[in-house]
Amino acid sequence: MPYTKSLLLLCLAAPAWGQSAQDLPAGRGKAEFTRVCGQCHGVEVVIRNTASPEGWAAIVDDMVSRGAQGTQDDFDLVSKYLSTNFGPKTNINRASEKELSATLGLSSVDAQAIVHYRETAGTFKDWSDLEKVPNIDIKKLASEKNRIDFSAGKQ
Image (cartoon, rainbow, N blue to C red; front, top):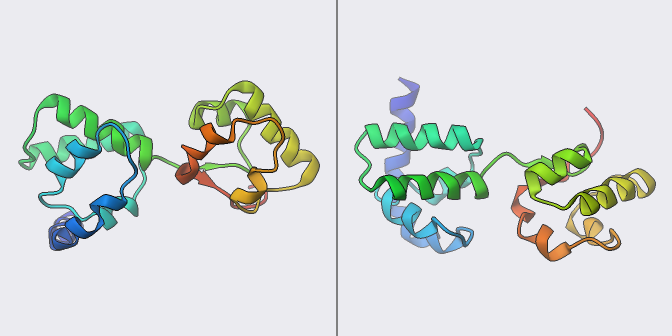
């Protein structure tokens, strides 16, 4: 029953789609996402959610089983677009060098610099704190900005 209620909410949000689609992150798969998924889903519903690549693939597969129209290439691009832009966030204050490299695509040197800076200067409160890390590729990191969580402290 909760699934039916969620589906109803998704379809009711559809009129807002045209107003918010331009706010989606740019990237390969955006056009397919807009075309294939925009028939029923509001952008706000997607933006509020995060899932792993496997989770987004399962959601897309479920929508295909419910009648979503497109090619397999379309669905693959949609899944990749969603997992890239709406995947789990990485906590910049808790992640190890390895996690930073794997989840944000940083070089090991950049990941090491972030961890070292965090250990010596304290936790990052926001983006401006992260910009203070010397010698990192801030432009590369900016492309992952929406996937960074600045929650402080250790778990």
